Image (cartoon, rainbow, N blue to C red):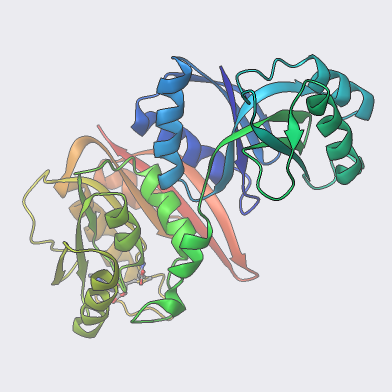
Length: 345
Ligand SMILES: C[S@@+](CC[C@H](N)C(=O)[O-])C[C@H]1O[C@@H](n2cnc3c(N)ncnc32)[C@H](O)[C@@H]1O
């Protein structure tokens, strides 16, 4: 059964990687069917009920997708072809007798110049002729036409509450300090670490706890470390606002007071050496020792995700990690973040 993830345009490949990470965590059996600009189509194995339960669960974890769509058809971006495809689609598994519908089109960038509103009306007409009633205000089923490299047509089975991430933006939290990751990227990184409900999750440079809040909200047991007492005080205020249980301590990421192989996942954003405080002999020492510590305390066959501004894969490999994926995220003209996904054998 084909499902399409309507991806946000905030990065070319991270939203897709986040979907795959969540499918893996959910234990889904899947194949990538097609990847278009801002739309990933996967073929999922299992009964509809089983798959949609997993998708509903995923929709609470994902941050870089908008909707998940059960696909009714995929075709070229041509008005007559799309209307034909919609007309010939078996929509019985999307809408049941008596339910109302709406059709909404989303045109991704420059992929077509089809007029979305006209197309919505025409495709809506094909559904109307099958005996269903439209309701623009409060429909039971929303059909989606994603006009990207091809036209992907289907009905929404789950939506991601993206505004919840806005509500947790750094400026809205009780304690603010500059240089913080935004909640959506923090959540995506937590997902890339494949942290599961009940796991022990660690951030050795936790700052104001932006990453810990996102990890705690998906049910991990979070532990944070930072070298600055006042920052740990602020992290506590922020965690209190969202979580009932967490552990924080003041300390040095180069000498972590945790036993070997006791954490299931690590996501961290170490200081870059610009404005953030660095407590180490040099940035080189900080990276060399903190990567060695991350490796020591992480369990085997688990992942660490590290954000940096300069290449640090050499430190990661020296510590023993395997670099699984690397992403570049342009923040502004003079800052490109490098995101390393690391695996401990
Ligand atoms: C880029 S900030 C982390 C921001 C964090 N993601 C947040 O949500 O606020 C880096 C943090 O590393 C901390 N730090 C610097 N040197 C450290 C060390 N040796 N051990 C632990 N933390 C350190 C700084 O105090 C700072 O809070």
